[in-house]
Every structure is written in C-alpha cells, then in structure tokens.
Length: 224
Image 1 (cartoon, rainbow, N blue to C red):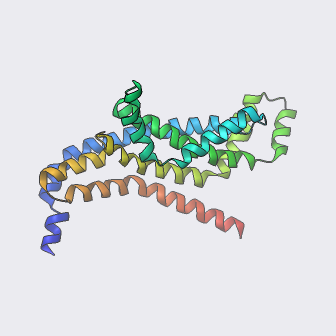
Image 2 (cartoon, rainbow, N blue to C red):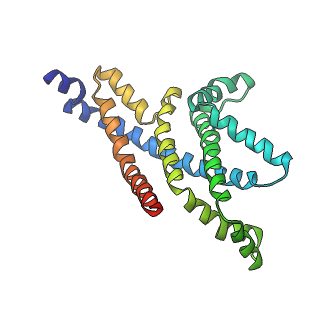
Image 3 (cartoon, rainbow, N blue to C red):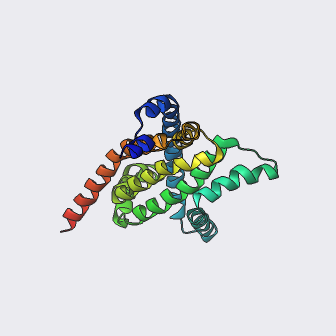
C-alpha cells in the first residue's frame, strides 16, 4: 500500500507540481472557452444553411459535416499542425488546435442542431411569418430557441466531449493540463501529477455530468 501511495498519491510531489499544473489548468479553461463558442457558432450557421433546399448548397454542406465528423480529431490536429507547413502555412500549436477543434466540433454541433431545427413544427415557422417577423427574427426568437430546447442534453453532452478533447492538444506541445502533468511526471518519475490532472478534469466536468443526467432523467419522466 505504501508503494501505491508513493507512486500515485505523493503529497510532496503534488505540492511541488501544483504551480505548473495550475498553469496547465488555466490553458485548458482558455482553450475550452475559445473552442466551445467558436464550434457552437459554426454549428448554428451550418445547421441553418443545411436546412436550405437548394441542392448546390445543401449537399456540399452535408459532405463537409460528414467528413469532419468522421475524421478523428487527433488525426485532424496532426494533419493541420504537421502537414500544413509543407504547403507553406504554419498555424502554430494554438492555431492548429483552434482550427481542428473548430472543424470537428462545428460539424458535430451542426448535426445536433439540424436535428433540433427539423423537430420544430412547421406551424411555428408559419405563425412567425404570419406575425410579420423577418427571416432573422424568426430564427432568433422562434426557431432556434425551440431547436436548442429539443436537443439540449445532446448539446451539453457534446460540450463535455469538447472539453475532454482539449487533452489531445498535448500532442502538439500546447501547455494545457495533460501536457504539464506529463512534464511534471517526466521530471519527478512519479504518476502523482497525472492523477492530480485527472482529479482536476473530474472537478471541472462533474457538475455538467450531473446536470446532463438530471436533464435526461427529466426527459424520461416526461415521456412516461
């Protein structure tokens, strides 16, 4: 038992690594606050456009969404970070991570919101049009609020996945939480920093996990 505590729960190493882990945690928060709104905004725009009936617009958008949902985020990140410089475009670590997450999360948010938009009854569109609302007013005040409510658990679940995916930024040496924990581990030859990072992720995401569970239970209760 003492060997386990020494390897995974060493308080001295945890305290020594705390400053660098705190910096990594801040980077993770910053990355999440950047990628989630950007991905959600791109998802809203793509979802709205994908509801158009023009084949020349709809089919390319559907292909775009399918492609970036199918490509693993890690592969996309490495491609942007290590591949684009051969084409003369170096995004750097932050740029590559932001672009990869924007493409991947935007595609997922778009598909979720598209389903929510299609679940809004056509009568709501007609009623808004009858009231004299302009196109953007119908979207902002009538369609999108109902669409978001229809798929809110899915949106929250996808957001949780986005925050967890920030850990892959360590692959391109962006100093987020996991990268800093691995750096501390390489110096101390001890797994305690990794465990501390895991606890930090848990504390960050657990309230949202409970919120998602509560919403899902409420939906199930409403169907009975």
